[in-house]
Image (cartoon, rainbow, N blue to C red; front, top):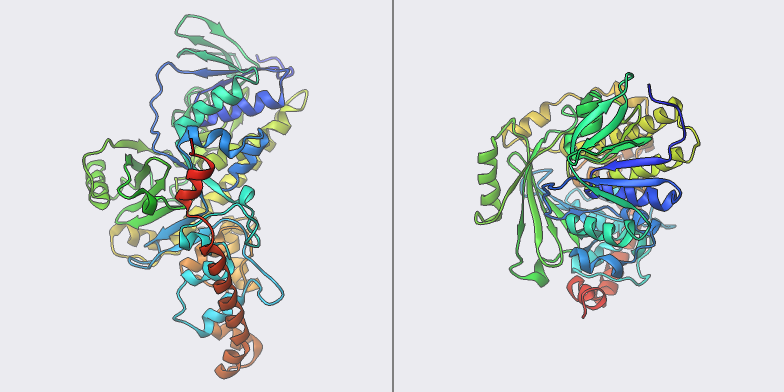
Length: 516
């Protein structure tokens, strides 16, 4: 039976992005502990690019990593937004979810744009981001700046990155983990021995060496070697929340780099899922996320090739395990990354989930003895965050009006068990129902207002405004909202002029990162 004792020796099993993130952060936080990362001798990787959220800056700043330190080595570019195209309807013109917060002042509040939309029904939904996020002017112009010119937008906090995930992992290993004194074992695990209580006793390597630790952190990807395969911890599928389970991925060359190097990830909904486009500095990463319940892999590849106009590339097939294990810390095994769970790639949540799980793990490891209560805290807080993010991603499908294929028609028929979500006020589904019902306005923070608006799901309507204010005189409301229209148009024009003076993304990267 496993002895209850302090955790002083930790094996991080897996050398991918999750493994290097965990091993590096633990070695920095606990220099006195023995932190050892185990990398297999030959691990296949996709390496098509990684799109991040602005929260990645928290991780980089944890190590005091500056842009110039890593971007050139990782083929990186800047990301200011996520664009969604054809999710609401085919040919909908697309809409943006820009990073940073909506800009509210003494004349504009959370509902100002929706009031204007209520009396201007032909106002395009794209105008929401343009009106409420001044830095959309940069994105629209293909510009970027690190000057403090746009309210509610901070370059260091709100700009994310596109980078090559494999190169970033290698850079972290050489420049962060090893200099911190981290150790690496490059061997394959051939046997896992168990204690009587089911916990892991030791790992037998292909060199016949048998090694032991106080805690094993599973970062083995979808394989989930320790938590799933060995401890047989049940897996909770999120099939009822999210429709996709497969992907094809590839790399594309630029045809016109200065034009194609955009400061945002583009997500385009198609017949049986959606296609991502991630512009890195030297090339683009692109992929087709789909459901194999509606199309087989070969046909999906044909659709993908047709959409991107190329069939002479190297394509990588990925089968995704969508959902999360019932428990993430079981006995002396803790899972982080894909081995714990995965929400499909929409909204660039992969690294965000890894880093969130990691920052929840560190305080627990500061305890001298980690008992079952502490483990259950890790399980609960990580699963709660994960569930809420999965619901947020699900909103991109639930709010769609598409019915042009069986895939999209079945999404319209999906039944949502609302009651199971309504007890948690942080739930995105709770927010979608309760905020519209009770508050008649969306929050000014987070991505939900941008997604909901882009999908024509508004917190209030002209009819509701008239009803609750006991005034159905349309001319009254038109006059009442004229000042809102004037103020929004004035500030849009102002920030458009400001953005015009700033450098294009290509030129900014060339000068600040890639010169020399």
